[in-house]
Image (cartoon, rainbow, N blue to C red; front, side, top):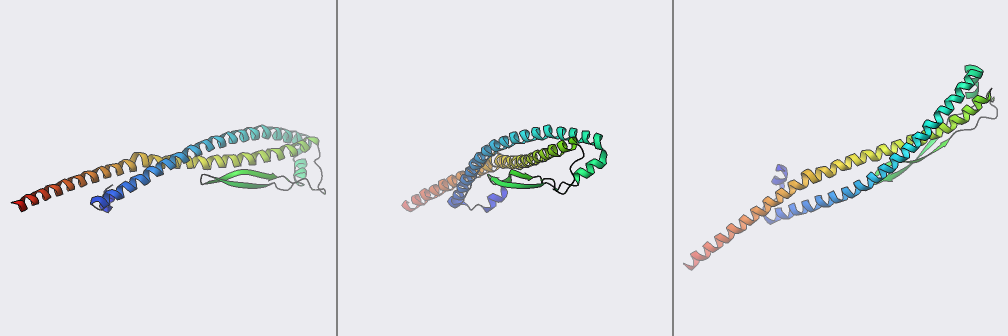
Length: 207
C-alpha cells in the first residue's frame, strides 16, 4: 500500500478518499461473491449435463464400433470404402449463450446427411446398422463436446472470480482498512495538536 499512501492526500480529503475506496472494494467483493454463487450453481448444472452427454456417447460408440466390425468381417475393407463413399460430412452448428458474462455453448444442432440416392447401398446389413449407429454417436459426441466446453468455460470463470474475491477479502480490503485507521489516527492527532495550539494561543492572548 506504499503507492496508495503516496497518492492519498493528507487530512480529511485523504480520509474521505480512503473511505470511498473501501466502500467500493467491499461492494465489489459482495457483488463478486454473489456472482460466484450463481456461477457455482451453473457450473454444477453444466457438469451434470456433461456427464449425461458423456455417458450417452460412451454407450453409443461401442454399439457403432461393434456393427462396423461385423460389417468388415462380412464384406472387408472394400465394402466399407464403398459404403462410406455415399455419405457426406456431418455439420455441427453451435448455439451460444452468456452466463454471468461468460460466453459458452448452450446447445448444438447436428446434421448428418442422408445417403445420396445415386450412391450404392452398403453391401451388408451390418454396415447399414453401423451407418445409423455412427450417426447417433456423432450427434452424441457433438452434445458432449458442447457440454464439456461450456463446463470448462464457466469453471474457469469460477476460479477467476474466486481468486478476485480472495484478493479483495484477504489483501486489498484489509490494507485499505489499515490505511483508513492510520488516516483516522493522524487526523485525530492533528486535531488534538491544533486544539492544544489554540488553547496556548488563547492563554497567550489573555496574558
